[in-house]
Image (cartoon, rainbow over all chains, first blue to last red; front, side):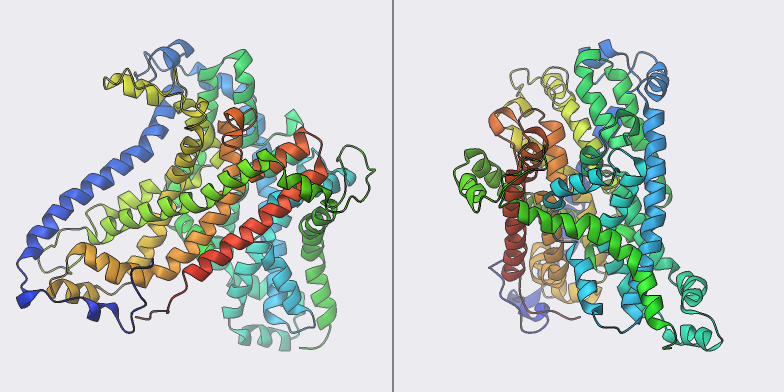
Length: 302
Length: 308
């Protein structure tokens, strides 16, 4: 943005006045713009929704019409695709694996992340800043760099191809942002309550679990949603650390299915699986829309 | 507050810090060390080879290709995504028709509907999005070519992902598609906090809408734009581009390595070719590119902070 130099004061004052400073254009200007903007906005909405609708529609078609006429409506609703994907294509297993891994790592991330953040935010001790920046630094470096040695670390510990191994790694990689976000959050909480509890004889850990953690609930929800979506949608870590076909998570299982489809050719089942993986998150998003948006945008900004 | 303080601190930090050190920090340090060895990753033996891997990297045509593609990803994808998102969110928030006795600028009717819909791709896994578009791009039976046939463009049937000149653009377009909505929501939140009387004054003075965008909206939103740019660039260099390129252009990363990006090349060298040490060397190069990118954007985007 080289054209606009930093305005010294509020930018409004820099706008040139046209001769006479007349105002009649405003109404018509707004109307033309209104039509134009609605046009553009509707167009993009269609561009977003159409691929998703196409996937849903295709998941109800048989293989022949998927190839023959991709845009035609299904001749009838082939629910068989869905049941085939759920049972034969192992979608139910992938689903269960994903729920287990994400459930475990989400709880672990929130508990461990808030413990570390609480200590870093509210206690003075030598090395506090160093540990904080050690955590926060993890947000900016490419995971891929550490992935090769990580594979061997996990392998040496006998955690390769296990769900609990995946959980531990997910937690470790979620900690930088979680600690960063929650440290800022714990700093904003009033310290008088914690001090009062401590004077009354509560131990540090009791103060934390019974008083500070409930107070931090809004922050935990935001960072929890952020981590939930990130962990649910994770693809790179399981691809590298989890090659046992029985332990696959949803994203991984679907990609593997698509690759092996070259030989089996059950495209309709694959589309059904794809839609099965999309619908729960889309549904959850529509229901919890406000919290999701707040959680994710807070994630990007702070 | 001193009683048992250190025991408590150690107790609370030990587990998170230990896990983080073991799975993130330690592998990270190791990888820089391994880049000076000839480790294959297949056997535990290796020896130090000094800068051999780095010399080899400079002579590696595929490395230069992947670097070029990664830079394209880091520069072009965020610019297009953020530019388009700014345009859409300006439409959503300021494009509304003036209603009687309402504020001088207003959102279009249904602005919250647009924001909800645009955000859809953001909650989906990038892997699922990539799969979906891999089907849509299929030259024979995919949705896109069949749509082109449907509107009478029978002659226009590109190979999309199979065409070395097109594949990279197709992949980048998917990344743009999936991220625009996030920035629309982000920028809309920023625009909503700009006081309406700034627009009121500008429009009274005869400014048109595009002037108000460049003179009011953009300067006041600049901090958000900049952090969004860095965020998107790091994503486009790392995990996101890995998923789209690996899933959509299987095989060697596009016809004739035409879509290989640095992350994918690290992955292939390490886990396909058994060259763990060389892979970490490319990883170090990726780290340098990422840090340089963030530094350049922060530097270019530095301007006076505006308060309102």
